Length: 71
Image (cartoon, rainbow, N blue to C red; front, side, top):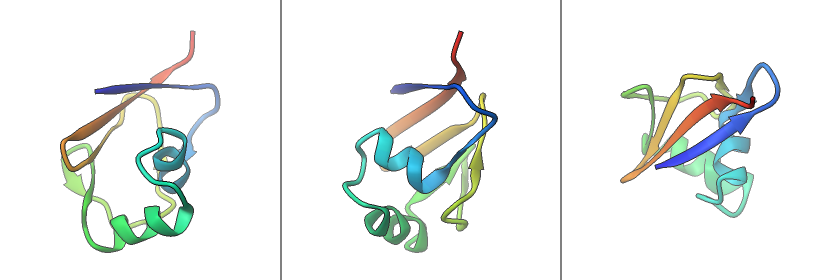
């Protein structure tokens, strides 16, 4: 599990995947989303730029990202 500390209100899904190094480019992130391979809080997410907020869990394959508020 990857714990990602966020300093702002939200981060876009495609940017989160890049920052966490699950993809190398925005295009690759978009492709994963388009293919239905990304889940947000257990549900397939089809919005490339969905707003991910603290408390959200993003799953790509077996990798899970837990978004937390930076303290």
